[in-house]
Image (cartoon, rainbow, N blue to C red; front, side, top):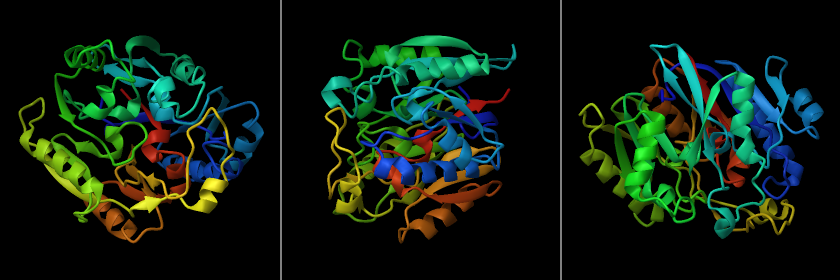
Length: 350
């Protein structure tokens, strides 16, 4: 699997619409998704999957150069339901992995139900891209791991070893599947992700490879914040780790926003549904600047109208001196449980 910072042929997204995830009929979220799509489209092609009900609305809201296709889905988390692509450069081939999806924990978690259409999205994307497909014998989401493109994978125990995903598999068996399907040789396990991340702690909200041997990590200087312990634990493990090529890792801290919480107005704007996780006033939001997208020549990162926004932008520009860094206000995406990286999925270029 190539790293995300390697060249792409394009990016896929899904259009939000369900009212029990996205407040006020998903209109604020649609505005945020459109802003993310427009920012990414400055650097590479973007395809937006949308239901037949929302096709005309999405087509009108998006620029003509963004491709809009009808794709049925249960929600809009393309990173987790879309395909993970792997390459064979010697043969000039790209193929897609279609992981099994159970909405981050199935009925024991019930973030939403059903998820049957989400589990078909990867196959549909690969049909459009005319790529061969591997259907993996593993429940896994694309946001649960990052790779460096040189044989190293980073993930969290709280997600991949959770009994609500693959209880029949041991840690060693899960590692073997990751190595087999993704072509990695070395796996770095971090205990848990960002505090109150409802995905059980996806690594893409906590840390990521920004180039081989270099990792960005969410951080807080507040020793009383529960996130501090988690970030310190991750930092300690990363400092002790080496990648698949034997390099010690360089870690860059990026201070988290907030802490951020859901307001009463935001909570009341959601439709009640017995098929979805309730989102209540005062709920801690798993805000993180690490949940960004690495486009061709650009970085599209989340902003929250927060006092830490400017520092995060400046740090990101220092980390990516050869890329244009674009910040997008994405609180509306965070209210649904994720952010920019969660709603995008890159297709690598050969």
